[in-house]
Length: 415
Image 1 (tube, rainbow, N blue to C red):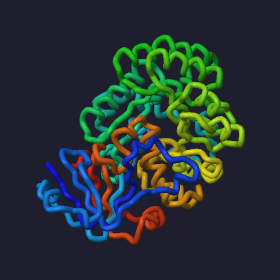
Image 2: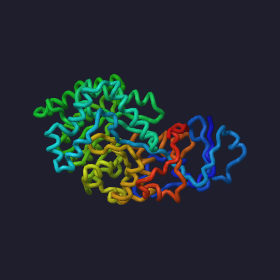
Image 3: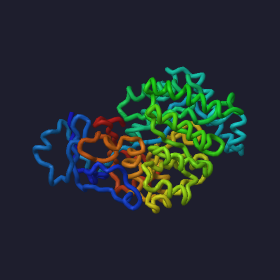
């Protein structure tokens, strides 16, 4: 099948140079063509240019033609940090928070990550998949064409494998790109509360080998933060994961200056995520590294916590990616457009920086920037077509409106 989109008001995020990511001042760069066309053949971006360059020969290749008039077109979102495979929900805990209970008090009552682990333990693999399908369909309709999904609500070998097998089934059943991350070190199960090192041993000696043997994950993650896993424990887990071919991605500095950013760079982590507590030392460590700083403003909004210092990071020359952190406890939304608006309102990021953060840079944070993230000949035709709007600035500004007319994944509509 071939599809021609013509009279596009602005075709945004063009790249012909196989760019890895944009950092610092270059995050303001969004190459574009006004009054453009885009040709898609067999799910791949085949050609594009200005309408003046659209020849009869190019138009003749299309089996379908769509006239977009005043619509913008740009790459679909890449959500590089989610936990969307989970059982049940935790809205009651949030009501308890509204009533004044602290996170620690909620956890003592059986809430938090351990509550999700309990729900997941009593949910079959088939039911877990069934609960995940509506979430996948929802995020695709909202513009997400690539998603990273973490385990971490199992906290024992069998349940972690259950989650990862569901993620694998999603990958095989839906057109979006899916990357799986093993996060056995998300929290410490209640039965290991006074012997955390034994749980770390279980992750290293039992979980990682079987995850690798069944080829269930590309990445390994650790929640390296205050009250969770220490730098030393993170070091041990990542070292074991790397030996089995799992590249690191780390939760770090959400709750304090944990040293997680330094550990991420030491292990050449693909990304380091959260970063609410990021100072000069952490920024200096990230400079000239291959690790993508990834900010999750949905969690800061939902938990009423400090926001990561995105403005300072970009002004210091760093790249930034944005992701939803879609999970039942701290960010129960996979809406990347909302994340863009939070970046504008709360992180003081500019629209061009935001678009880079949810397309090119987030593709890098998933290891897929060679096949998606920009409008490039030969890349997947994963694109968003907006409704008629004045320009890119309007997209994150209008935070409550559905401004997406269509979402194409591999050239096919999913909205």
